[in-house]
Length: 103
Image 1 (cartoon, helix red, strand yellow):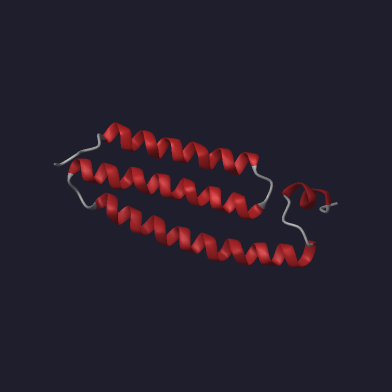
Image 2 (cartoon, one colour; image 1 turned 135 degrees about the vertical axis):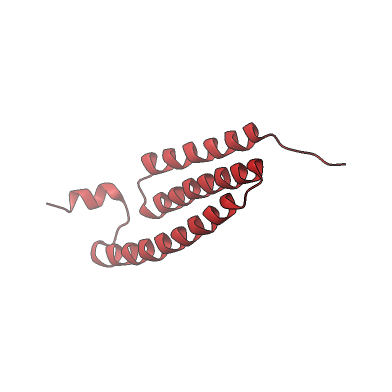
């Protein structure tokens, strides 16, 4: 028995994941959770690329997903290095506390 999922449902799921990622970036105050929300947004866009490539029968969506994964890996490595440096200097990862320490 073969079951197929429609293109609209996959794009709806990708859109929902992207909106959840945006909400996480806006609502959360911890830098690590903000980075995780950005990862969710990147995965949502990758899902949309793979779904579109599958719908059109082209491997372009999978190629774009590989590029998105490479970009996400670079973002994580640079982001975690910056987070470690911020925590070492300020002993906090809360965005509000870092804004207060600016002045």
